[in-house]
Image (cartoon, rainbow, N blue to C red; front, side):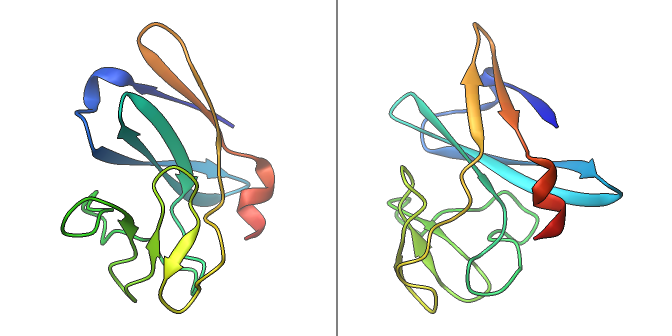
Length: 116
């Protein structure tokens, strides 16, 4: 499933969630902008299958140096999704394929995401 998100919605060090329905299941993802680069992930902590944010698009640690699961405190590198601290240390967020055109981000959410 292809999701289109406007680039103009992102300031430096910002993140926005999105959702798409695949096989009747709502799949949540999010996009982060850092240093004019964009990164897309499934919005699922690797510790337990809960969203990182609390449905408020707050994906960052206090200092915005990392992504953080606000349920259990797991912290992830923005650029790689690698968990650096918390109950799932060493795991990685599920990366979503992201392509850019002039004004939009095109994110591919695989059908297999409905089985996670």
